[in-house]
Length: 445
Image (cartoon, rainbow, N blue to C red):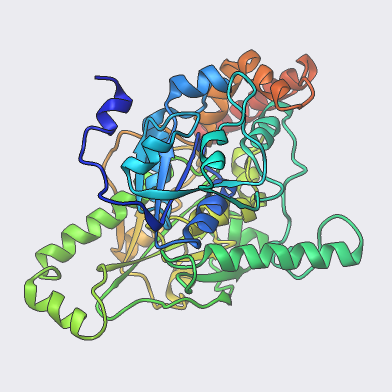
């Protein structure tokens, strides 16, 4: 039995449902453009089934994947608007395959996707009148991100997201900057919705402070400014804090966040959260809900580049923030979070001092001190256990690209991107070597 046959081995849906929407794709190192397609698809119905192509099918039709199938499935399953992921979905969407899952309509962006023969991947569903089009998210694609890695560019960095959203920074005329800021703010609003894609779902804040407070362990209260107000913590929920760069938001970040929620659920289970009486009490007041409210702090581009050098982050703070916002394991996002959460910062939280500060086993940043010394002193530090994706981060993803540079350059050429060239590759090697020396010097200090 093939993998596709195995996926179809369960009983078929009894009927086609108008509100059960199907989307499919590669979803290779998941970015906010992927999430945008899923959000728009989810808004067209009440359920969203997401087909994920196999590594082999993508290699045959498009070129090598950066992330393997398990990693890509983890990313899809973490998206707030996804009802179910379906692995081994055929590269050319088949009517019998989507009908097996009860999906009447297929949704895709307004760009054309072709198979290895150059034919439209959606020709069969289009002919059957079961195809719907949504707008493609501008200014982001897997091709763009691979290009940033290969070319080692920094032009994507954002100095102040707050000013960009206000139309005070960015490229273009004053009118163009204002229009771009409004479009970006609208997208943040969209990504902060709940699982329906239509109601407010997450809190979004900015934290403002000096560069020293954001980069080093400098005790400074700073100031929180609300951008969007979501439902906030519900009665009885523990507020927990996580932070990071979340660059190239990947299975390593996602599994860490999932483990945070699982740890809190296990703790709540011991405290009787899932007892029948407790569940009924919550339902009697409206609806049941989980025991944890996860706040994710996202570092500025400048902070990440200070510590990691080269041209990290590959995604800017806006792109990384959207990736975190769309994740089902996150309830609030703080843009501009400090690299080291100090007591002044933690005790001035809009939701009150967090009950726990979590960190994962992944070590990507070179450190000359313990950035979590304060949460440890406060007795609220928690570390999630090791997991299968703990070594997957922006650095390992860039390494995968660089090791198979010729294959990815060919994939870029197929997408109409100019050849990168040896000079750009050598420039990245030089910057990587400089960063290694810096890290060695910091480690020996």
